[in-house]
Length: 325
Image 1 (cartoon, helix red, strand yellow):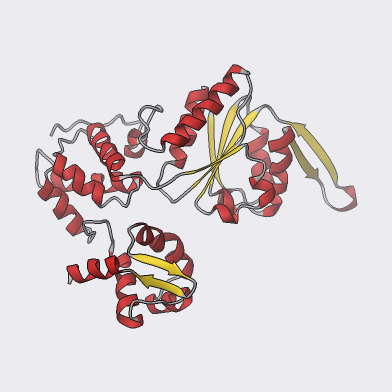
Image 2: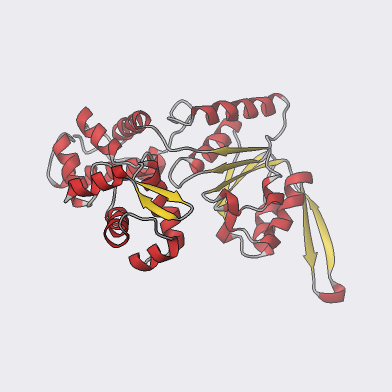
């Protein structure tokens, strides 16, 4: 393995980010639809409709925003819902937009309703309405905005208000990736990182990547650390397995907190059903964290199900835990 240094102006994350539609692996239906929307807009010399992406963290929503801007040859401006705390924050961003800019708002579900009120006319008629002054002396100032496209991303689409959601021209849900696509991503990322990786190691990393590109790249970077520290020239199956053992990640990607959740339901509640608040108290964790971080992957693997009575560990979940004992 050569000690090739990545360009100083890039981070590893940006180096691993796909630079073209052909480089973006997976989500084929979304890519097809986006390319039609963008091509049609370019033919009409218009800015594309505003677009909303939603799905679990790490599935490529931010990458899609970069690719949309690149496809349009437009400047991408990035912010997030929590960063837009005041009217002045969103006014500053909108008033600095230039023609055909792409504005990306991550975690859009965390925008408060007052900020949404500013976004509505901006999205619909490209107007920025600002209130100057207070009390009886207050007056409304209206500014024209240039044509722009708003891209928004969220992991919690249900928390976006209906008025805001209705103003997006298209909404796309990103699904978990198949293992075959994750393997392709690991191979491609290994090339970017100049790693000589064996096919079996690719499969081991992909199997533990939780069907998520970001997780696959994170594990690959930890394997890269392992082989670097141990002066290995090749990433083989043994290096991949030992890295996962070091991280306490099992062969299907379950981390200690995932296994702990299954174990508590099995040991304390006879496999369930158990309510979310009771489970949170037993785990000494937050119910929202359990629902948003732990459960989606456990349900995707078929180890856990939600019922009207509570959470239940499946036969596959029992088998996985017992095989580790």
